[in-house]
Length: 295
Ligand code: C5P
Image (cartoon, rainbow, N blue to C red):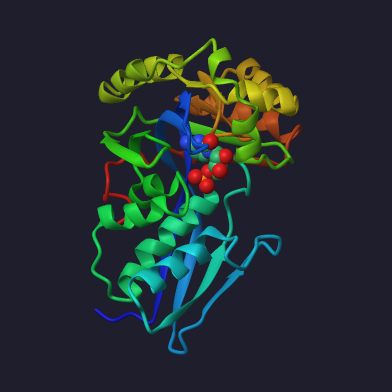
């Protein structure tokens, strides 16, 4: 099928666990993360350009429109690698907060890879797209697949998992942007005293055990970001006080999420947060396995 325009959803992710095992000689950290997709999504519209140019517009004017943008980088890489004659105009409808720990930029790049695979008729597999994604950023391969997965290495090695127990996710982002390199830069791996129990989280997911999932939440970057931005702790405390079953910061932050199963609690937490922070989202986990949600 030949397309001239294609629209692809780019959902956010949250970390159910984030453990750092070691600092690597290449400057990255060896991680173990359980990640899952949620239904807060950007949309990437791709329109074929016969003149070979790559251009980008975003609904949020502060988002860069050049190679600093992961989606633009994805298009440039695909064009160069496969010597594509045509170009593309990318339009990103931004819904996911930026620099928030939700992989918005990585997901835009992954959506661009998936979309251009069709728009430019490249016939690549998901695995091939994920490999290209790893050249753009550590979270991009996960975003190429979506669903729920254990990510290892620097985050680019993906093992697919089944869907976690269904629940509500309330996301709250304080009005600050967090730089991932800064947070990793402030982490002292030898001083981490509370590693998440990744095995227990895998068991919680395999058995769809909601309370075990809540008990197994853990992120070793949380303390670093909390020390840089005390508001993050206030949001966590507010969520706990409002009855959240589990609370954790996602990625390098500053977004914090609460997990709940009862709808009445969703309203209580949402209302408590709204007086305190502007960016609050109530979403569901899109826990399906590879391909089911991002076909
Ligand atoms: O891979 P990505 O470009 O998204 O990573 C951004 C930065 O985050 C890296 O340059 C590095 O400072 C840090 N990082 C890390 N270990 C990882 C992933 C990211 O130290 N596993």
